[in-house]
Image 1 (cartoon, rainbow, N blue to C red):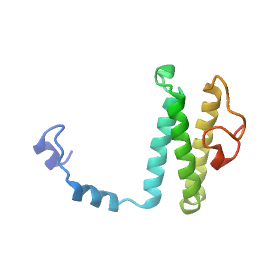
Image 2 (image 1 turned 60 degrees about the vertical axis):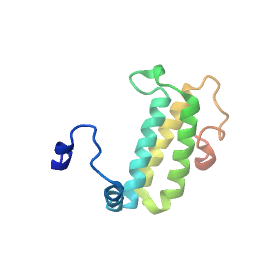
Image 3 (image 1 turned 30 degrees about the vertical axis):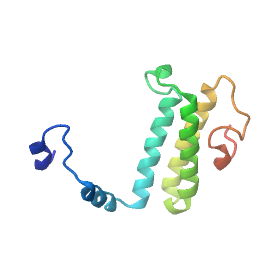
Length: 123
């Protein structure tokens, strides 16, 4: 915790818009895309029921939307991310796509599942 944070107290914002813009400017594109992708992966996994709470957090409509967005992001960014980063994100994406398929009472046809218009059929 910075001195500025300690002086302001808990819950009191200490950064202004200029500070946030400088913080974002310090983050490289690959790191930013990877971080956002990991957040989307985590959210999709929760919505597919993969958390300890399982079905309490499951929402397949939300999961479908998140997985579609993640698939579009990963597919579009892959050439700029490089093979190492893209492969890890594709593996995670495939995992949540498969989890979605398993959690669905009526599975989508191959090629029609979330994100599959970007990634191809996941089986």
